[in-house]
Every structure is written in C-alpha cells, then in structure tokens.
Length: 118
Image (tube, rainbow, N blue to C red; front, side, top):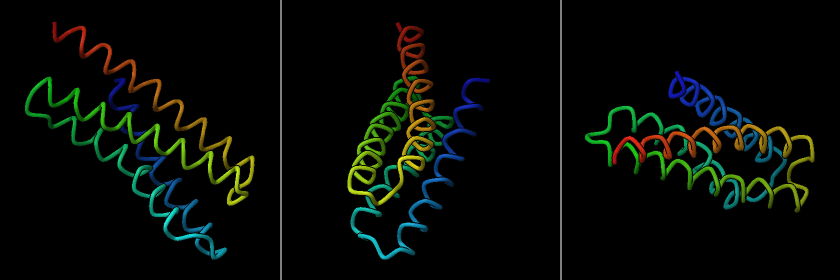
C-alpha cells in the first residue's frame, strides 16, 4: 500500500512540477533553471516506477535512493526559485510540502528495504 501511495504522490508531484514550470516559462523566466527542476521533479516518479520492476532487492533500493536524491535536488531548485521570486511563497510552500511527504515515504521505504535485506 505504501508503494502505491508513493507512486500516486510522485506522479502527482511530477504533474505539478510540469504545470509550475509551464507557468514560469509563460512568464519568460530562465529555461536553463526550469529544465533542472523539470528533470529532477519528474525523475522522482520515474525512478519509483522503475523500482517496482527491479531485478533485485539491491536494484530496488538503488532506484529508491536515486528518487530520494532527485527529491532533494527538486527541493533545492524550488527554494532557489522562491528566493529569486520566480515562484510565490504559496507555490513554494505547496510544492515543498508535497516533496517533503514523498521524501519521508522514500526514507521510510529505503530503511525498511535495507532492514529486510539483512
């Protein structure tokens, strides 16, 4: 059940990232920075999805750890966008909360998978 929730949350986060980037792009903001957020924000869900088809427990853990790293990177870009006024405080808070929720679930899942691996 936790994995399904994680898949759903990460997919919705990717949709939200795409929509946020489209809105920023419409306002003629930096495409280079947008691409960074777009890549990291959508990579989270892609790695979680790929983990569901992992060849081994180690592969599963690796995919979740990559998703976690992408989550941290997305958090960085969102903070930078907020600090440079590319997004509003409200947009930042909303996306930060979603990203944090995914991050907590990923950490718990990786910890559980590593414990079961031993």
